[in-house]
Image (cartoon, rainbow, N blue to C red; front, side, top):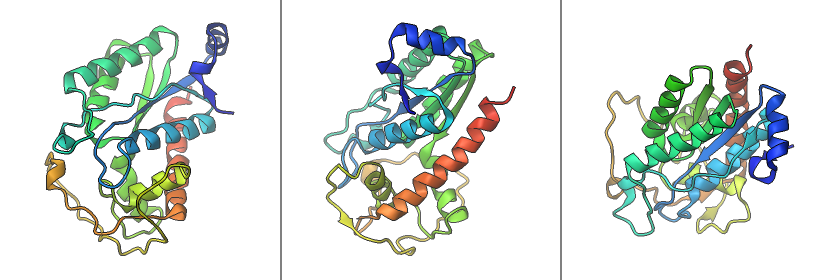
Length: 242
């Protein structure tokens, strides 16, 4: 059963915490331009992945942090970005409050690539001051391409607002209307990109978008299920060991 911490009262939360070993999943998203996909795409994906992961590992999950560090998308209207300083401070405060309330096992689910460095900085700072706390980050978009190739044998790569993202969104939120073609995706949508040795911060106006974005429910399902399987295994290995 999925446990939404916000629907528990204080006494119920305290009772669960006193059992020991209980943890919480923290979803982080963004509100930004996603080409033909919704502005909240990253947030919807992060929140629903967090809910599913929490159910699998028996943790609670808290409400999504819906805004992120998205300055790379400011050239397009609809983007609402926090500054790096504010986002880092916000996440550090949220994680710190969870620890103050007794949580010692934390999983941060990050659905926006622009947040990655700040999320890692916040978690590292938290653990520096609280070494007894176990905290890990599930950075969704940093593992997608490897999973497509190594686990699913797909010659696809994830692009911002593209077919892979649309397919994941379609599977996780089939109730949300999407302005893309809903069809089976062939494996030749994009070639597998080579390994990159440099970090090159990009801007949205520099991106090359897919000519036709498709949403494949079965592809989205396969990606999400495989992601949850491998992440659950690693979370249990890192957070559940005594």
